[in-house]
View 1 (cartoon, one colour):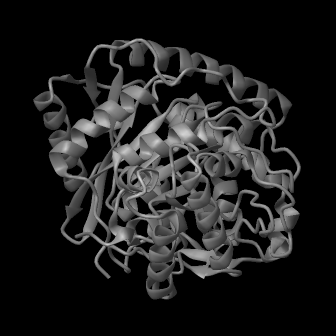
View 2 (view 1 turned 180 degrees about the horizontal axis):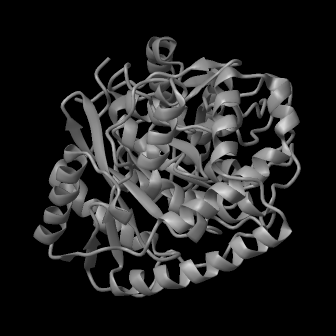
Length: 462
């Protein structure tokens, strides 16, 4: 029989709701796993075990009273340290924010609690959540439980590591340039970047963000099953008027043709043979499940990736003095390289970028209505070695190029799903699925077909 910390989110919710196991039992099992494994990984960097146990007991009492406690009844989840959680520091990996204690929950945290989830810890992120690697001067480095020599990804690297190691069944992450999708890919789990406006989010502890982050940054789930992604996404998406971008779009929309486009090398980018193999095997899995798959070129990604860099760096430059005061060596290097790659924008350049965004999005919407799912790389390379991006300027530039599909899609506001397909030698590998806005249902359907062929990710052996 599987340990409780090995169970998938849907299995836990069903068993807790049916009173086969208690939420307290599940929570204690995950806290024990966290105590045993996390010291090696440093995935969870803020712990509050008694609070988690108290929340589980309260949940059990409500179930005993006949209440419906929600989609995620008793499911252990983690929250990334860059969103507000009452009573916890919203550090964003910064020593400067170690005492920035949240007085209220971010809407995504509120929604998880309302759905019956039990928060068992808060997960690590790089300083300023600005890398595909997870290390900072405040919390330290997070390791990948599948292979400690590889990055766990970033910026939601703590979430990816925690989910893969069985510290939680669902991890909360955020994504402005791949920060949900890449940790999922690197740690061998699934990760969903929802449509802009699907999942409400807002940190009362900080000023509102600039237009780039408003258009590109979203919260989304990481899990070890497509079913777990679907459940947690539905829970996270509940209405909250504190986020003006939240959109009351229904979860179920009219059925679309089961047609997919396969693009192995967007914009002619270099793609590793192992990644190409995973893409073609995933396309074959969809065909085996009754999908029509055609290998075609997708619309260009590079123009959108350039706009991503411009908007992201406009926001980062606004906190340049804070970056200097924090003086995190990795953040300093990354910020300098990104500034060099993306010149500062004036007002005409900003207006031109926003104008180009609409033109690019129109082309993508047309494509995604002809091909409701695009199969493409998460990254052109297998997961990178730890700290490779700060090893040299040349290494940083190579990594930026490999991450083209992650950087482009947030500009468009479309949803994307990283689907784990197993291991390529000692490295996790997977694929990315893309759909039109608010069509997460199509992504989940295609993801389930691929998962059925490859098998759901299991907890890493440690």
